[in-house]
Image 1 (cartoon, one colour):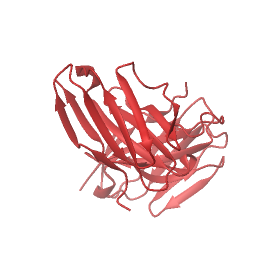
Image 2 (cartoon, each protein chain N blue to C red; image 1 turned 30 degrees about the vertical axis):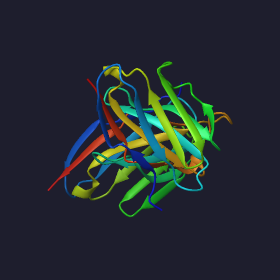
Image 3 (cartoon, one colour; image 1 turned 90 degrees about the vertical axis):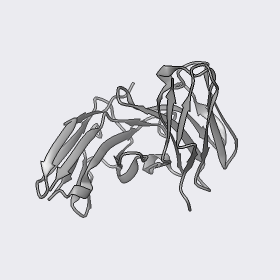
Image 4 (cartoon, each protein chain N blue to C red; image 1 turned 180 degrees about the vertical axis):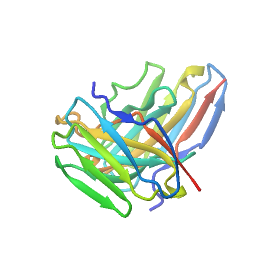
Length: 114
Length: 113
């Protein structure tokens, strides 16, 4: 069974601060996806990384896939209240039979206050 | 496109009753997934379909759960009989290329009393 551990579980910061969320596993993944979920809604895809060592930037968000494709990080610069939500990483299986299945991480709940 | 559409948004039922959750995927998406989310266990995959065929149902908790996809635009998840421990938010998601991302519906919050 592939497990994805996220840290920290909870994060409460003030507007303007920087933060990093980590997603770690002992398993190798074919891809690593990050989602953000707001209360009462389903997760929304932020980014997908597929190559070991890959770095993607979306405005103030920077995503990195580990060289061994076992871990990932999400860095937010100058956090805003609109960044508040549950951040989930999700890994795609490495084998043909599991590549379509996403295993979701334990989640990081972020609150950004004024 | 209206996205993935789930109904109902909320369902409250008594223990022992049958519950049916519905999902309309995004047109053209060949993959459909049913997930369950709880505080204790997070998001768990229950079952997924490819081209309307169930591919992996290893996550279905027990025989009380069943899922069907009679055509490319509709899927159901049925629980019969329902139990209080089934209370959770159930999400449907669809995808064209799963390795590149899913689109989730807004979920059905199920409460079994």
